[in-house]
Image (cartoon, rainbow, N blue to C red):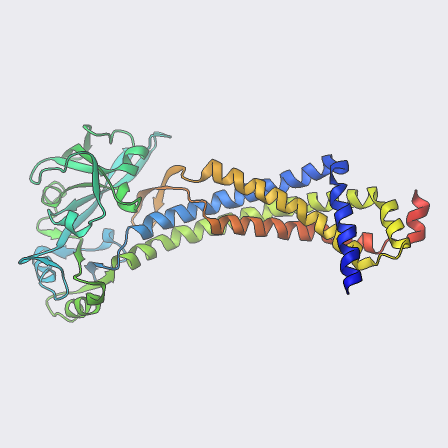
Length: 396
């Protein structure tokens, strides 16, 4: 066993040291695999960034109340009296006698994307004065908070970056509604940064909603209070509502988009991977052909076929690892943190987010590169191991 290991290490070391002699074909294989890894990681980083923006928005200490059967805030509806009943539920955090909950509207306004000047549906959320107490991660970074009862609004930093006409001091028009942007806020990079916030009473009038809302976001006195809060509301005969933890709601909102992106990413990687595997096969066949005398000599000296097979496979996977590392580095430098926006198919609104090239994605990309190297080197390795000594020596 030790002899076989020693033989394998010797043959493998010799093959790897001779890679510079086959530099042209080796570069082709490395570039092909690196290209696949770049595309693979870049596409999947879209899904990771979108998912991160959605899931960061949620907190287990907050509960979202919507109409029973609604799959998003867009399809929900809650009357004013129902909202007041919701705020009486046990488990809800209170400041004195005031419940820390915000009855909210969720509508869309048309703005153009800065990059393409194409129209996009941007979320406009009507909030109550308690909204910033409910969402304690929200911080104003420019300007000031809008005054309730006026045509003022604040906007998320990601929305400012992505949409034209949404800068501090600018005015946004939608039908009869005119809003002046007086502040820019952050929310830990969550989906909330894609939104515009204004007085919910103002939006009720502008959109002919009367005394109605679409959701109530409540801050619980502790995450453990959720069940008591939910049970009181769902068993109350005055209400027909569903209650979800906010983080669970946003996690579900991201499922459709991330599944679609992952499906596209894996499909593209599979198609490109076929080409990269053929490139690796050709590279390793060239390597075997150029090492015919060397392999025959080693076999004549008593080196076994298994050592030769492992040597060729290792060389192929070494090139693949090199290509995978290069591809991962380029993908990280080129795409991580890149700001963009896409459609949330649950609410048909734009979500601004940043590509996220995570360590898990880089490991996936490197693993895929190694798999391509193994597959690409397998047939040439088998050919090298089966190469007749006499035939190989006569060839040269």
